Amino acid sequence: MPTLQLTNFNIVCATLGGFITLFGLVSFLCKEKFYLSEALLSLAAGIIFSPHATNFIKPLDFALGSQANLDSITLYFCRLVLGVQLILAGVQLPSGYLHRQWKSLSLLLGPGMAGMWLIGSLLIWAMVPHLSFLHALAVGACVTPTDPVLSNSIVKGKFADKNVPKDLQKIIIAESGANDGLGYPFLFIALYLIKYTGGGGLGQTGGAREAMGQWFGETWGYTILLSIVYGATVGWIAKELLHWAEEKKFVDRESFLVFAITLALFITGTCGMIGSDDVLACFIAGNVFTLDDWFRLETLDDSLQPTIDMLLNLSMFMWLGAVCPWASFRKNDVIPIYRLIFLGILILLLRRLPVIFAMHKYIWQIEGLRQALFVGFFGPVGVSAIFYLYISLQFLNDIQYDGSIREDAKRLQEVMTVVVWFLAICSIVVHGLSIPMSKLGFYLPRTISQALDSTSNDEPAPLRLQSMQIQPGGAPVPVGKPTDYDGQALGLRRPISAAPTLGS
Image (tube, rainbow, N blue to C red; front, side, top):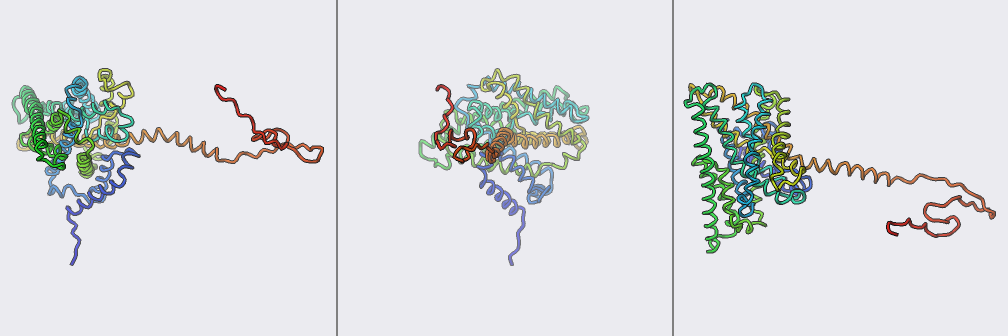
């Protein structure tokens, strides 16, 4: 006898497939007419289908009821999406772009990231009660990188083509790609100091010297430099192998088009095995892979890579909407909700804008204050912040004393979970609505004005009674000229003379 099989797999397939199908039917309308980002819409869908609403998607069930497993799944999902996004970002840039634009990128990735880190940390330190500045530095590091997924809303599509210069689009892509991998040094200088000096250094030996040694050795040497070398090596070998296979006619078109995606998966997996920075390695590999511009030009008009990218992004933000700890924003032991909202506003307004304003004269792609305001505001916090959040939580789990997590590390985990998640959600919503709201603010007053003018023009003209004069023949004749024709009352159909134009 037929029975309903309401398993999690069936429900997730139906929910995810149904949403993406319905979104596809109106995707052009949403993205090109209303300028709504797919990240915002899929986040809203994730909330609707989550345990907080309809309970179709049950993330904790997928993780076998373990919060640790759920955190690991979210981290791996973020790694996958960022790896694919960043190798595609590297492929999009012209040949030798990082080398030719080293000055602008150095400013954005050096003093730019440092400024955003310090400003964000200061705001967090000021708004979160009873938080040390060292802990604030760790939280601020998570929201320092700009998100490449959310940045796509201003560098791709109709809005970007009409309003954002090509040079500005490229520098935004390059910055968001590179600074995602370069968030490690800012995060781990704080985490190492917390581990070896926080809480009186309980359970650890070596102090600040050990912390700085590990920061230089492991973070800069093993994580950053190794990932750059590894990504460049893999990207160059992949380029040469693909050239060889194409010349020998060994590769078909489908495999050729998907090559960059599979390369991202390979780098993400192998870098994860050795414990290096897979995010930065993917971006460097994408740049080296298209060093001769051959692959980029061959796939310029292809839609396979953007299609896979879109599917991953929709799935990612639905997952974030489902796993986000919404209840903790209202009820927690970290920060009151009114302070949390005010912190979100301050981060969006002050984390990046002052830094870009201070440097924009030295970055030739940013022309004038208007573009500086645009670039300064659109520095979104998203998947990369969640990625660094769960990297931090894993690290803090290993700071133990007497067989359990040290108290200061446990407290920092609570703060980071609430603050980073809330700032990421704020950025997804605000940056997702910024373009449509700005368009609405531009068109709405003009539309209302036109509607009022149209209404006034459609109203019938008021009835004017003209004085009548009786002629000797007894026929009444109106006194004065009518509005349409001169002498109409006398039977003369001579039109009124046209008003003289300029130059006549």
